Image 1 (tube, rainbow, N blue to C red):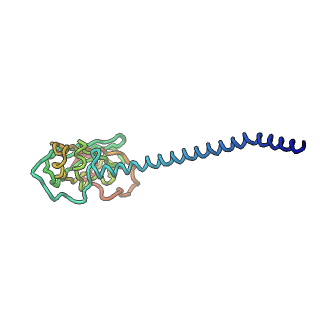
Image 2: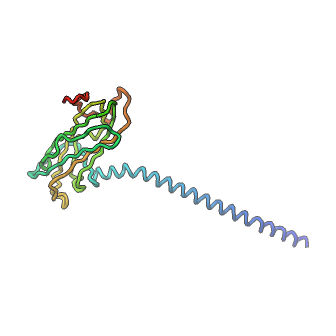
Length: 223
């Protein structure tokens, strides 16, 4: 009898402990799932941040999305075929600049090394800083429009009323004639948009290299 009672007590204890053990096991599984989800979210966030520079690099390498190529030197081959390049200028909200091309169009030969000019004027009474985004249209021209030097490679700082000349050196790759889509093009549009940046401290030099050439340092309308 005593043995039976002991066995019954052990069975009852085991039965009572089973739900608690099951609950602890379920809690551990939930914790593992939660940690796994946190890890997945962390990886996705990291990939999202990494995707921006990777996508930008992909566009620069391939010309995808109308992103121009960056050339380390000028063209050495010129073809006897011309194409019209149109120049577009825009300013995003929050930047008090007047920004425009000095020439609206240029007819250039494929492979010809060309310099075009834009001007920007700070219409405010304070120092302002901007950086330019750019693309070409149509998208198929992006892989063949090569920039050698450009104001868009550096941030630009303008004093109150200051006007600067902003040259861009480029060529259209002669390989354009070998592309099934691009060879049909008769014109390309080069477009820039300036976006506002935080104003630098007084006396600070522009970041990223040589600034654009200063043309006027006052807003009196004189060239």
